[in-house]
Length: 537
Image (cartoon, rainbow, N blue to C red):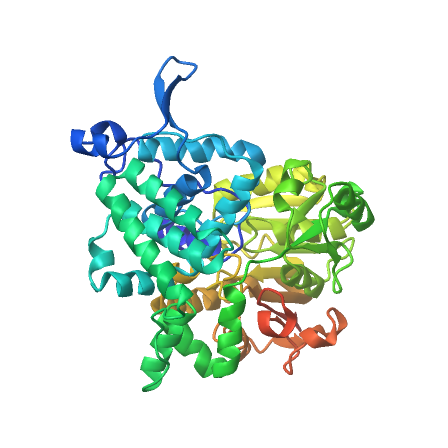
């Protein structure tokens, strides 16, 4: 059972947008592939000169400070290695604010053997953009690297750090408006300092070759021709997605819609912020704070407590608005799932896969201190965080956390008027925010997830009182995880019937079957799905 529980938690963690830094790839020793400054041969030392100084920590230990190296590139390279080798998430939000710079520089020092100057606000923004963008475009960038190396095995045999430096340089040249000479110079310096002179020379040659091809419009692009499989492979490279996803979307959406969907996934995501009315903090209050901070915003057209922003997230974090519980980051697509639940004062609600708790907290704020929410989750640590956040948001009085596997929960002791199953899913609707997720999902995962979703739906249905409502939701756009799961459930449970969501969300989000559905192409929102099912007996 423990293995099953861990698997459930893993799927749920991977399919939701995160605003926490997940520590991973913590090196007690330096990465084996890295040859550090002090280990260079005398020939390497004579070939390059760097501005390094020795500083001492509070405990008296000496540490090397390299002032020639761009801090955001060093941090980006190491974080990309953590993502690829250590399984960390590509965090697009950093709730730590300025303090996170020390953490990131600690990873750099343990991995590369030196520190750079401290990260400034601009550096943190660049790290976010470069890490997210390089991760999204990895397949396309690797295609170009292989083409310029003229060796199909180049990436397999390349040192991990060297590969990340090349990806960063290629991404900066192709996707960011940065001076070409600075991109080449800074990445060459990083390769020489962190690896060796020869690595820097290779970075120099490849980046200059890329610049020449770009200027002449001669970049080696895959040709979209041949049979369906060949066309899908070419599109997967051009738009940097796994081939199995591309083939699936072409079959489900058609070619044009599939391309639009992939284009959305590769754009820098905007974010929505929900004002925490449980703390007496309204959207008007939030707008006032954003105007003081000079953060551009747009009012949500769908939810009264939400605003949209495209820039300024670090400013909001550093101002302490999230840390003080005045607001939280939550996509409108997730907020509308709560509207489908329709929590009202006095309701008894069960949230079956509650952690990390965004929907739980929103529902709690709607209860106005009257009613109850039983927040069930298999992950004890994440439940603890939910409980702490609920206290911060001043809605903990209506929330009770229950550490349990839903499938093993005794339905005789827990019943609810409204039961929400926000099921573990593929997360295919949130790929713009979870840049790394596309590379962590396999086609084989889908069948396993579907079986898990069916089992959880059966268990959740046992918790619904007669006349009560079961709400099933995902952050996926895949019919196999959405409409097909509801159809299969209704065949097994004729005591339930569909209750149209038309009373709870606006018409553009209501499907022909009476379900809630949002999507990037149609609504410019994350993909999400929800169904209301009423129990008759």
